[in-house]
Image 1 (cartoon, one colour):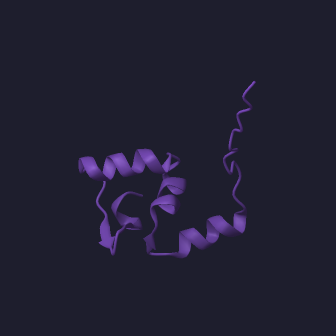
Image 2: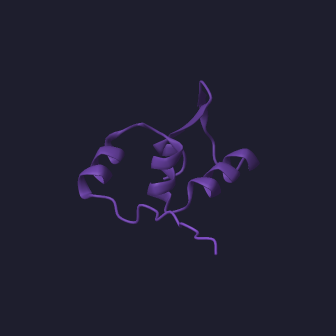
Image 3: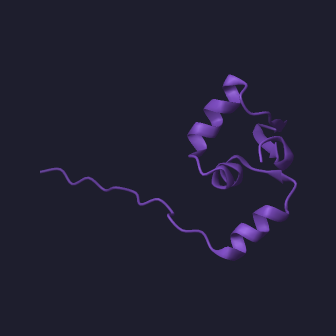
Amino acid sequence: METMLKREPEAFITEGQVRAIQVKELLTLKEAALLLNVSPLTLRRWTLAGKVKSQKVGRKHMFRKGTFG
């Protein structure tokens, strides 16, 4: 019999983490997805489809808060 482990997502974020994200001008994919209440994968798809603008910094997409919020 095979045992499968399921990874539990981080369901809750602290108020301090939210405030830290709100102060930043450029957000990472994960931070922007959190503020938009979508999964990082959904935000990545929107970015690649041209629905959301991002800036490339190295290999990462960075999001300016004013462009989507």
